[in-house]
Image 1 (spheres, helix red, strand yellow):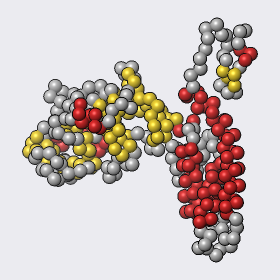
Image 2 (cartoon, one colour):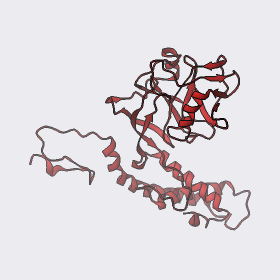
Image 3 (cartoon, one colour):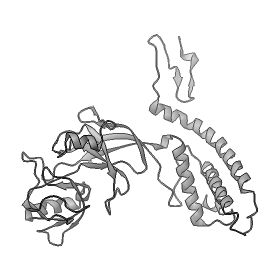
Length: 332
């Protein structure tokens, strides 16, 4: 695809790569595709140190307001060391003093194993803690890269459907300002994009599970998310898209770019009618896309459609292979 687009005068490899990914992104945003329908999950870690009647993690911490580092005593440091290299990683979890705000952990300094220092994502804005009690668990969970919307989220242990549409952060501020409701989560509440430096989910949308989970439980979700951008020469276009369709959309974008450069360039080909070529590429793209959408429709229907059947009917009135009504299956 890169080599073909390089045939347009005035282009270069970097520009062609950019336009191909812009075209691929535009195609995904214009439609719902079967390859965007993803299934994933979260596994909530238990409270660091295990669930206890006191709801506290091992040891104590020392932290001063307006700084972003927390120092653990020997007991706390030993517990942290055990969770630094093994998932769920300590840097995916949050730390708090009971009844105060949560702070995300972004790094751990283990230079002194008896006094490990945790770096927080923002300065500590709570009272000073000297050998104070604390909790470490995970309240925020990342949606997949390229996330667009949820279809469902399920607690498969308790056979519960998770509510991801009716609560906001304002609701939680009113109903549980101290975040002291610890139980099996019932709600998935938008929090913010992940801005934690060095985070493996940097830039992805974070969601708060509420009530906060402090026991290990699995959650399964289905969602729509964009396919990742093309980076390596071995990357492939997901079915049912074809390279031809992506190239046609890329040509359209490049022709539009060339049209905008007309007054500034004097290169070979600068006098071409880029507007005409743009319109021709768009028409051909629309034609190819229409055919591919028909191919993909059956896969989308399998995911979303609900077929109504009558008790007296025999056979299957709908054929998923052909995507058509099977009249011959009725009344036989």
